[in-house]
Amino acid sequence: MVTIADTDSFCCLIQTHDIYRDMGELIELFDTSNFEATHPLYSEENHRVLGKFKSETGSVAPREFVGLRAKMYSLHVPADKKQSKIRAKGIKKSHIKKNVRHEHFLNTLNNARLAASAPFDVGIRTLVFVVNCSLTVSYRQRLNSENNAE
Image 1 (tube, one colour):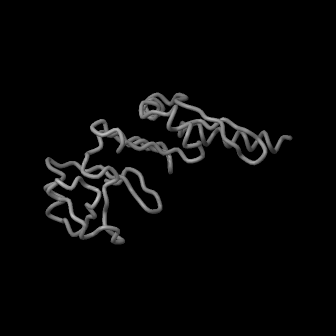
Image 2: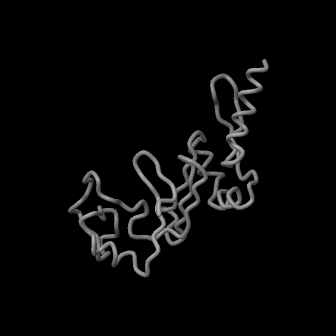
């Protein structure tokens, strides 16, 4: 089941007893060049071949994924912190690295509360971007109505 998609990628929920056994049966569909060299499925054969599936976290399985909206997600890999990924388009990468954690995404998803904020520039004004999928739309609508009232 696809949980979230972008123009060049998607995240899907796969329920299986052994994902690597299943991948091995269809290895021609995968680029496993980012797996550890000692992993049984590691291969350079499909390296950078268009149309092949590639794991965002290599051979380390992610524990949790939280997708709040397009280009705003957290992929949590507790076994290898370097493989964990947090993306939040519009927020400076330095702020994300220092201040935004996977738990903020979980809190936003589960409680619909403000999880994290960061200043960023839009045109002339400096605004506060809210990492919350339900508040983002209403925030933009309110901002547009305030701009129209001026």
